[in-house]
Image 1 (cartoon, rainbow, N blue to C red):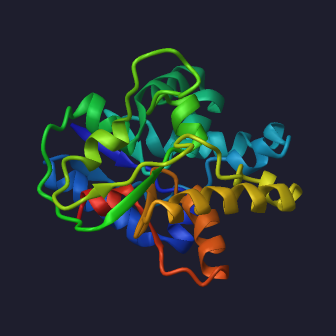
Image 2: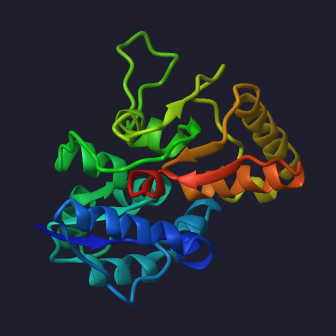
Amino acid sequence: MKVALFVPCYIDQFYPQVAIATLELLEKLKVSVHFPERQTCCGQPMANSGFEHLTQPCNDLFIENFSGYDYIVSPSGSCVLHIKDHLHGNETEAAAIRSRTYELTEFLTDVLQVKQLDATFSHKVGLHQSCHGQRGLKIAQMSELVAPGFSKSESLLKMVRGVELISLNRKDECCGFGGTFCVSEEAVSAKMGKDRVTDHLQHGADYITGSDMSCLMHLEGILKRQKSAVKVVHIAEILNA
């Protein structure tokens, strides 16, 4: 199995430890991981702002970098969903890439079918289910549906020794980040983020985790401004701990 690691811009620039944890975790699971060094932004910020017509150079470079791999794996649900929904260009190659691109937790559960992990993280953890992952990639069930509940992220966290998953009042509520929404509607975004943080704090979380570092970055900013001791950590870092 030849897997390409797709690292989003904000992880590359601000949270490189998440990319490293993802790489180490996949290698522990005996996956042959490759890192296309010429990869850049996937184009999601432009598309979210209404400028998808300007993203073709990003699409072309993505296709050039990630063609020929069995799978493309990324520690970001939003970037993966953007590729799955919006990657176009050389349509034969684009279609192949769209079908082979996975967010990390869905790759672990759906492709590798991981049943156990050699990891320890002895803390109380709150799980933030990001909107892109939950509603776009179907990584977890939406609470408003009358259907059996599931969460791929939660099932993986339960394999980690020492993790105590806390309950939340509104476990699938949006954090308010929303990509460029947090810039264009900063007051609404900040209030939504504060509500999300409060839910975790009320239930005694030591850490807030999730599959999207962009959401966690938003929550981290609020925690720091509140001078809270609670930290954010990407799920890859816990699964690799």
